[in-house]
Length: 357
Image (cartoon, rainbow, N blue to C red):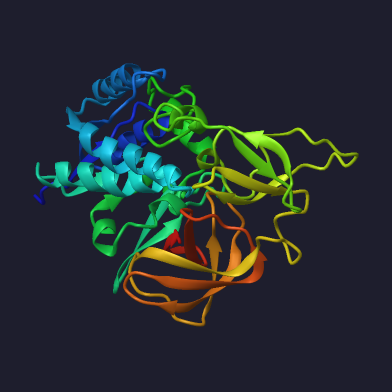
């Protein structure tokens, strides 16, 4: 008889990873449940003990082995410290992208392969497509839950060792499956916030590592019209996080159109930050640290891109591209902040992307 394939499933204690394990077990795989332990600061409400206990309950319910993968040190360095350093430098990072690349498909993948696994699996809403030329990353069928944006740094080699059983399901169907399998997490609420840290206020989190410092808010004419508690906590296009003291008859909201981290100042405008008349919008942006899933996109060909998770798909093309950097040109001007990830698609296939300079 052919040996069963062994899959290590990342059990987070939530419904998605629980159903992932149950589906793979039903499909005939040898399944091992793994709880990935990560760093948690002592000043936020910690749910790790509860989540680990739920993961253990799932393993017991399904009758599968349970292991724990220690990713605490790597998470602190590659996700938390990275996020703090990026904000301190005035950029707007995406910690979920780094968490997936370095922890779930870095530390956990190595952990599993070193213990004889054939694959790892997670509860992501995305799909792996196999072709004669290799593997591609595709969007999940549930548009509202698709998570391919966060996975754009996976490589063709990674995808050959990864399973995403939920990619072909809608969230409502996953909940129904959890009830069908009688899983104890069937009615558990979805986790929110930063990947594996949970629901937290980013500004409050950063304030423990970056001292708040009051600075001036400038209007477009250069006059001081308000104050804020730190330019590093704010991002371009944001309309909250600062106070306007020079009130005018025009009650339209103000948007951040510029910031100077060294001088700790921001400039705001009541003009829309999007569109042809925007002060900030531009058609081209430079991407650094580009990562393509399988092959380099063709220069001049029209693709679509997301500049934020679940953002609109925007028509674009690649102007220049090398091993590390690329220039992306959009059909319409848009506002994108330094540090954000721009992810390219061709139809349902995620091609990869990079980080805005």
